[in-house]
Image (tube, rainbow, N blue to C red; front, side):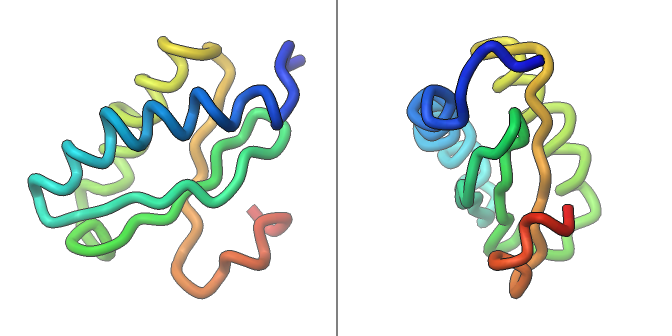
Amino acid sequence: MMPFSDEDLLPPVKNIIDTKVSPMMARDGGAIELLAVKDGRIFVQLKGACVGCGASSGTLKYVVEKELQEAIHPELIIVNVPIGMEDKLEEF
């Protein structure tokens, strides 16, 4: 059970994505957008060079998710939402 509400999680998650993750991805021509935080799940969307990149799922799991887990809570899960599916988060 997550000890934080979605509202509590949003600011620190956004901060880490904006200050640590986005600059790293931008160096490779990619981008990441935070869509929502629901029940300890962080919904993001990859953009730019990250779309279709074979390494993007590994980057999300082993870099972004790990960073969020270490900084905020070990049970956070990152979910990549394909472009066009932003209004269907409940399907993931």
